Image (tube, one colour):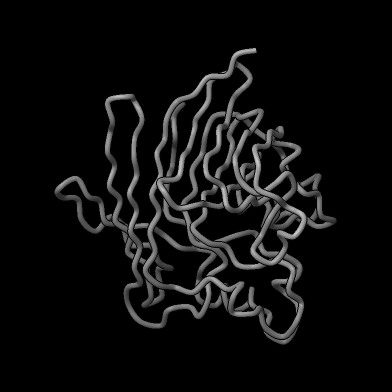
Amino acid sequence: MQVENIRLDVWRAVTDNDQLGSDRVADGWRKRGLHRVQHRIMDVSGGLTTVRTAAPDKQWGLLSTWSWTPYDDGSVGLELLIRPDGTGQPKTLPRLGISFELPRIETVTWYGRGPGEAYPDSQAAAVVGRWTRTVEKLQTPYVRPQENGHRMDTRWAEMVSADGTGLRIESAPSLFGLTVRRWSTQAIDQAQHHTDLVAGDTTYVTVDIAQAGVNWTGPMLPERYQVRPGKAALSLRFRSCRRTA
């Protein structure tokens, strides 16, 4: 299964709580340009690709080094290293991870927290186990479209299309957060009603190192639920999978 448009990602669709309280954290994120970052390849050498991710008119950025390794069993490993670059770094990030697109996926099976969504500050009802849901059932239908459907502490996930072919992602050894949707983050961010969201033949996947909490409505999100810019790493293995009836 073809993975397309894989890139570092720091933005999520703003939640109602991101826009509440004296902190209004979403305003600070937008002021730093986190919703409109661009990606520029800085260097390709020795099997490593270094990319700078930043808003075009800001001095801060994130440098990510991507290393891809093919294995004899047909799988491909990714080692991703991230470090801050430049001045004026944002105090916090909405999330830190990667995003990519797949052909239309119908079902997702994962080993991690579930069966409902789980964020750092809203995981009390989610337990670690093996779960299977359709892509539609992974969504949480809030009144206004916003960030939802994240499954944290994932060890592996299989995303399978109607014909039984799919993609398996495994962590090695770190855990990751998984979100699988019919719509892009940008489409959700711009939508006012669920009828504004139109599903197509593309599935949008995010794999997170970390994501900020979503439920806090006080003056400031507690530090334990924040995502701070800093050195980070992600180690994954991608492989084809097939499900038979």
